[in-house]
Length: 254
Image (cartoon, rainbow, N blue to C red; front, side, top):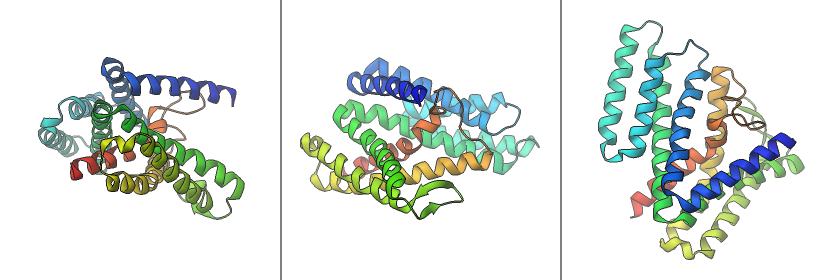
């Protein structure tokens, strides 16, 4: 527990500095996340490391992060290469390369939107992180205190319906109050209201999705990089989905 708390404090400090100052520091942190997160995912497959696929995933993620105007081109090139590999390499079948594409897009788009949101408004960026973090925290504590009915034993045996509902309620309440304190970041009231309602739901779905991925590959954590917390992807699971949805909402209502 002590190790987990220390690691959590370090992560929190790095996150606050990156969110507040942005710029080179944020991009350096997210570049590391892109590279190491890609490695974690490839390593989780429990196969001999395919460095061609690893390089392709890293390039795709970084491309979506830093060259978003060429996103369609980057995605089409990655699909073409992945499908070609699945045709000619019998060790990399179709159902084995498709998850690489899916994770590349999720990771690349979420990291791009992190840079975009921080540049737009650092407190709005913090708002999205707060939603996913507090939804998870309150779901855990409410579940410990009141949880009786399992949410989805197949994917995550410890999560309960009561905990999930507690996380949704407090995730909405705290994030909405944060947004109100900063005048909704200059965004329309209805946009923030919709986001505050939807993002806690998406946060919990993201957590379950990454639990499903780990169960699929038969791993407990994506790595042991962060003592007591697992790997980069273990810490980003719900953030990825929240960031993507909020970025999509901003694009839709802009």
